[in-house]
Length: 227
Image (cartoon, rainbow, N blue to C red; front, side):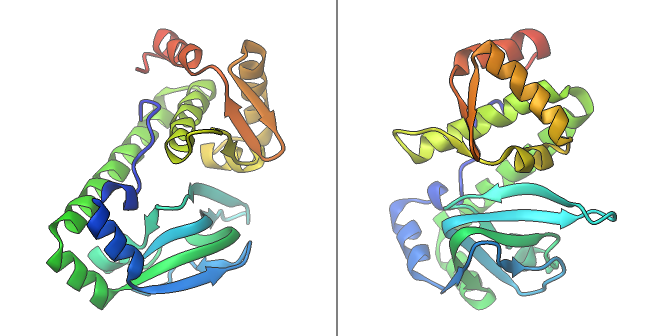
């Protein structure tokens, strides 16, 4: 992922198709912590996050919840319910008060048939996700935790910078970050402590901030061959 943020579906679209999509469909609002969709749900729809965040997770056999991703405004989900007739593979929960725009199957089919930019944006976004998934699997096999953490931080720092010209804090608790990386809270804390000693990050309640991007990038390149 090279420290870069994958572009959201909405931000991949030209202004006209983006505004069209933002006017279509049904708006649904969810309170903090609400279950939006459960694993196995078969509603065929494309959902776009407009306000708030959405946690993508599953429960392990021992009952622990593992967070795979946190979706931000502009991110979408549900594509494979439409394109592959597949049930939802994850649970989706609201983080904060959340607003979702839901595009049902009939509307999705019509929009994709009428708009080449919408089709191209969707294909590009799905290709980026596939690349990220393959790279994540490779990272798990080949990189130690500090390197995987550095890549995660650089990627999400870039995403925060793209969303805002000011603050670039990454809004995430250390517990949620540990879940996303698939490690214990203790192991994550040790890696973050090392980065803080190096002056690369600061942490606060529910946030992490990368303070020295060039130094972290140099370390990844020199010690782990990540450019």
